[in-house]
Amino acid sequence: MVLKFITSNIHKYEEALLIGEKYEINISHENLEYIESQNDSFSEIARFSLDNLKEKIQGDFFIEDAGLVIECLNGFPGPYSSFVYSTIGNQGILELMRNEKNRNAKFISTVALFYKNKEFLFVGECHGSIASEIKGEHGFGYDPIFIPSEKNISFGQLDVDEKSLLSHRSIAINKMIKFLKEN
Amino acid sequence: MVLKFITSNIHKYEEALLIGEKYEINISHENLEYIESQNDSFSEIARFSLDNLKEKIQGDFFIEDAGLVIECLNGFPGPYSSFVYSTIGNQGILELMRNEKNRNAKFISTVALFYKNKEFLFVGECHGSIASEIKGEHGFGYDPIFIPSEKNISFGQLDVDEKSLLSHRSIAINKMIKFLKEN
Image 1 (tube, each protein chain N blue to C red):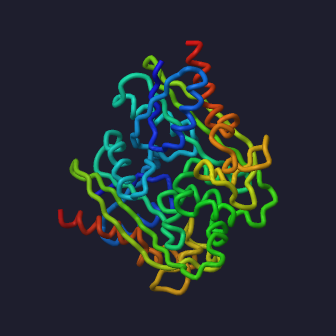
Image 2: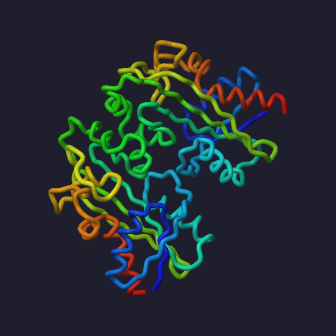
């Protein structure tokens, strides 16, 4: 089975490809930018994008939207994680939390699948905390400041194989693959 | 002439109403939420929203999208100003700029008008700087930390009449009204 992953983020594709291989699902890549809506709900954003893409893409495909949700910052940067990363970056996040004891955060991934002419959503969450400094060279975005609960090192210190064992994105993609195997 | 302003922000409507009165343009209010796209360009966001609204609204109408663009923060919070305000607030912005000497910032307002079945865009900018503390009870959002170049007090310390003499929003709305008077 071949499934298209529509994303302009090559790191996300790399992570998805690895997971697909385990289950003998061939994930291909289409590098396409698409319109995202401004919404506080990740699911609504994914649903809206899928609606807009389904007229343009041939065959089954999926998209993924992810964000970092920091408890003491009321969910910031949330759905606007990539814009926030590209402006204030990890240093900005650490600055905002300088005197903060509550470091709780989670990564949320929403995978929206268009399959046999129907839409399906799969959500993955990875709980953890925000580090006090930037650490690690792997991954992308907020990975060097996010420490998943299962580890005491950051996503940025895990290679892509290790990260894909516990990441929000792999949880969501695994749910999708399980669904595809059963349907 | 009657013109509908589609917005869920009553403060924006109040500002627009005042400007309209000066030119004998009766601006009415329709409290409607609409889909905004995620985009780094204010103009693209406004254009997209207008496209989605024009099927739903009877007669001529306009919308407005505004944001604060801070130089040292690479344009943050920009198009996501309201989400950023609702999560980290003015205190968060001041925190991010704690040790920053370059306080340059501007407010940008984009008014998108649907008039005689055509779309028109009007942009207003107000240059100024970010204060070192929160001051003033007027206005909304970032007003208490934004000092327009023409003054040495914040938007939050100006009442709505004073603010509307120099604000980004009033510049954009004035451009629209001038256009309407000529067409």
